[in-house]
Image 1: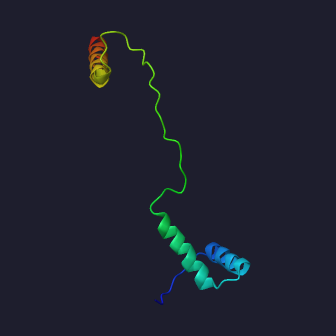
Image 2: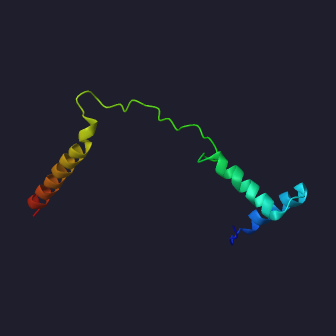
Image 3: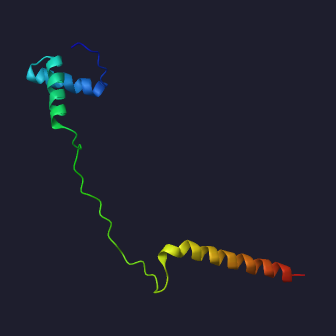
Length: 92
């Protein structure tokens, strides 16, 4: 099958080097490397170790629910707002 393929310059250079060193034609080198790549299947290029999160104590005191910290922040913000408003009213 005849097709047009646009290669990056660095890839074309490497393919030409392989063709020259193995005394094969450019077309043969391209086909052989494509066959090898396709036969390898969908594998990652490198195998990195999986990232593992190490649990660490958050240091919350008993009775503090870490899932309700946003609610606690809202309550503190509301109390602060009320205190500032009352302080402004009491000023002459």
